[in-house]
Image (cartoon, rainbow, N blue to C red; front, side, top):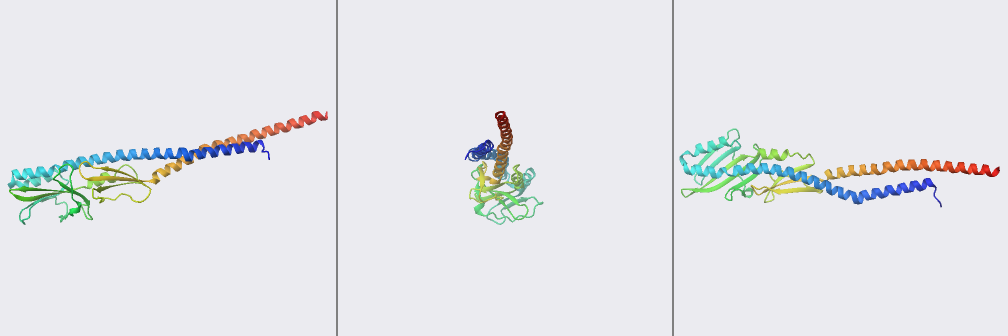
Length: 283
């Protein structure tokens, strides 16, 4: 069965279009998907590093306060309360400072009265050792009542042969705000995970089809996790495939119409030649 010129053109156009679509799907699409993922991860890592550097800077500054308080109290034991009040004035993020021993009367405490009285018992499982000071222990966690976000510190020391513990409770809302306000969009989720695997203060999105970017803090044994769903990539892939299809099918349709018009003109020309040849024969 011989195909007409028009059908040959249409078949050729269809085969070329199919080949281009197959090439775009199996060759171009995976490379494009990898490039999109690499680009997104690079942006996430940059945003993550900026946020973590800011938090690390603050935690590092806070981590120097316990030794400063201990040294000042050791030098001027009779001015303990004044030292604690001064320190709270200099650092308004402090909710409470407490120095205590086993004896019921061996306690100094200063607190910010704008917060409710804290009866805070930090579980031992939450305490981890700081990376700024090997003696300092820290705990970052979330409570159910105000203030919601707490960064606690404690350091054990001895004075006149008596063991004491210094504890400082910081309002960590600024950390939470930095994490919540990451300029990434709604398809991303960020959270903090301790070295024990506990998520504090918020748990990132979990489930399948997630890409996770994890990085460790320099000041404390916590890591920031940022997750992004495959939806971010799949949406761009769909847009790419739609654009590719339009880029391929559009010209193919135009070529098909032009081919059809060309075949029609050729057919008319051949018919005229046949009619002209028939007329000449009759003459």
